[in-house]
Length: 77
Image (cartoon, rainbow, N blue to C red; front, side, top):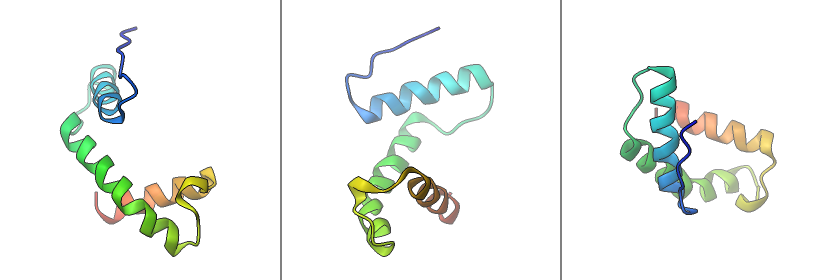
């Protein structure tokens, strides 16, 4: 186990998780910076995505949130 603190910062958590996944999977994974930028873009897009489905962005049921994420990722990988 290699546990690192992220200090409550999503960006740091993304980078730490990416590094861990790259290490244990031995697969080619985009950089932490690229993933963090994608996350920031998704967060910026989320209000419009939620509004299109008439959801409050803070109250999207998990199954719907998962579908929104998958749809967002597949439209612009």
